[in-house]
Length: 317
Image 1 (cartoon, helix red, strand yellow):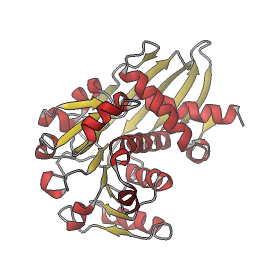
Image 2: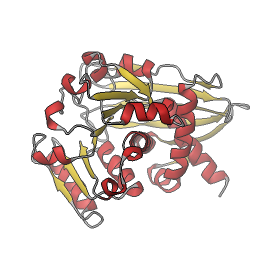
Image 3: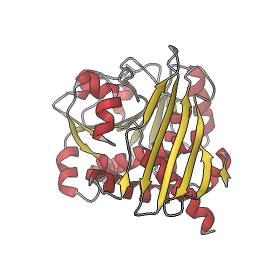
C-alpha cells in the first residue's frame, strides 16, 4: 500500500502521532533494547550541497521496522524527495510505503510541537497562553508544516513570518490570512516584533547564524530544525552557550555528530526530549526562568511513529 502526499495528510492523525512520538522518544532516551536505531548515513553527492540519506530503525516492542531513503537537493523543487517503508518485524513483510516529503515535514513539526508542549506550554499561565506569539523563520516546506501543525493544535494570538525568499512568506501569509487573526511578515530578523515572540521555529537550510542572543527575549522557546550537518547552523554561539539558555535535543549521539549549532558552539546539552517525558522534576529544572532550545536533527524513530499511525489508521478503519 502506497500513501502519497494527500493520503499522508488525510490519515496522519496528529494526536495519535504525538502519542507515539512521546512513547518512542521516551524509550529511546531510556535505551530500551527493543528500540534500535543506528546513526543515519549521509552521503554527499557532489560539491553543490546535495545529499543522499538513509535512516533505518526497528521497534520490536511494537513489532515494526522502518527505513527512510531521501535525497536533499537545496536547488531543486521539492528540496526533499524519497520514500518511507514500514515492515512487520516478525515476518519481514512490507506493510506500506509512503511519500517521505510529507512524512518528514509532519513528523518534524509534530516533534517540535511536543518539545514546545514540554518546555514552553507547561510553564505558561492561562493568560500567557491566551496572548502567545509564534514566529516561523523559513517559509518553505518545513515552515509550512510547522505553521500547519502549530495552528491546528494551539490558538496563537499573533503569528510572524520571515523568509529570505519574500514570495514564500507572502504565499504562506496568504494561505492562512483567513484562518489567523494576526499574521504578519517581519521585515528582517532585527525587527522588534521578534522580541515579542514566545515560540520561534527556525526551518531553514542556513550555513550562517540567523538569530543571536540580543534578537530574542529571555524565556523564549526555540525549535531549531533546519540544520542537519556540521556546516549548517541557524543559531549564534552567544545564544547557544548563554548561561540563561538550556539546550535539549532529540538525540545526544546524533546532535554531537550532525547539529552544526552544537558542534560549532560546543554548547552543553541539558537533556534529550525523551528524558523530559513523565519527568516533572527535570522538566522544571530545565525550563523554569530559562530560554530553551530544542535542536532537532530528525530521527528514524520519528519516521517510524508516523508510518505506524498511517498503517494503524488504515487497518483499524
